[in-house]
Amino acid sequence: MTDDTRAFALDRGETIYVAGHRGLVGSAIWRALQTRGFGNLVGRSSDELDLTDRAAVFGFISDVRPSVVILAAAKVGGIKANNDFPADFLSENVRIQTNVLDAAAAIRTPRLLFLGSSCIYPKFAPQPITESALLTGHLESTNDAYAIAKIAGIIGVQAVRRQYGLPWISAMPTNLYGPGDNFSPTGSHVLPALIRRYDQAIADGASSVTNWGTGTPRREFLHVDDMADACIHLLERYDGPDQVNVGTGKDITIAELAGVVADAVGFDGDTSWDTSQPDGTPQKLLDVSLLRSTGWEPKVTLREGIRSTVDWYRANRAAIRT
Image (cartoon, rainbow, N blue to C red; front, side, top):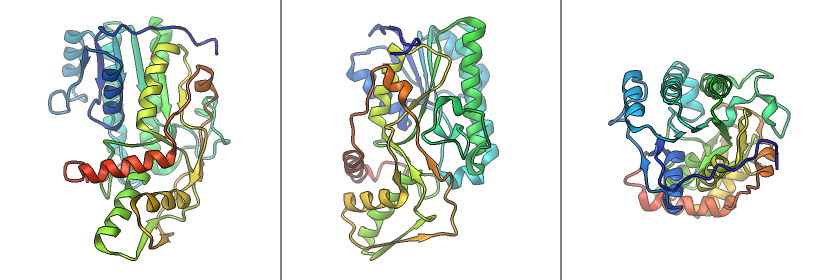
C-alpha cells in the first residue's frame, strides 16, 4: 500500500455523474457501477448536454450537485484522426475538461476522477513508463495536441487539490478496447481497426490483409471492463496528486497483435505491411506499480478479451460506429 491509499467507501445511493457515459470507457464504468448496486447514476448524451457549452455545464452541475464526477468524456480518435485534426482535438478536449472541472469545483464536488491517456508521456520515455515521466520530454507529434489537452486536465485536478483541498484524482489508461469501441475506418484505434479489417477480409473472401506501418511498435492493451473496475477501485482506495497509470504491465508488437486478431476472427490468409504509413511511438508500456500497490490487478487476458470483442462486434455490427 502507498501513503496515498485510504478508504473512500462510496455510498450506493449517492449521485454519480458519468460524463461520457455512452463512450467506450464511460459505458463500461456505467455498467460496472450498476452491477455493484449504485442506483443514482446520472448521464447526458451530447444531444442533451453540450460539454463545450460552459453555461450549460455549470447549470447542469449546479442542478444535479453530484457527489462524485467521473470525467470520461472526450473527443477521441486513432493516429490518423489525431494527426489530421490536431486543432479540433486540442480545442474541444480543453473546453470539455475545463468546463466540467470548473463547474464541479464551483460546488465543491467531494470526489472526482479525471480520465486521460497514456499518450501524455514523452515519445521516448524510459520503458516501462512511470508516472514521474510526465513533462520530461517531447511528445509524439501525431497526437501531441490531444496529449496536451489531457495534460491540462491532470494539472487542473492537481490545482483543485492544492487550492480547495478536494480529493480529486486522475487515471491514465493504456490502450483500451472492448464493447462500445469505435470501429470506423478513419477514426478507430489500432485494435478495433484490425478487427474490422480482418473480419471484412473474411466477408470479402480476400486472401490477404494490408496493415499500416511496420508492425514493430510495441503496445499494451487493457480490456475496458478491467478499466472500469480499476476506476471504481481508485475512487474507493486512492487519494494522491499523481496520475495513476492503469494497464497490464505487458506489451505486444502490432504484428503479434494482428496475428491474435486474425486467429480470433478465423482469417488464415496473408498479412502485409504498408510502411509508408506512420508507426507512432516505438513503445508505450506503462509502469503500473502504483496501481498494484493499491491492491488492483487486471482480470481479462488479451486473447480472451479480443475473442469476446470480436463476438460483440459481429453481434452489433449494424448498430455500432463503423
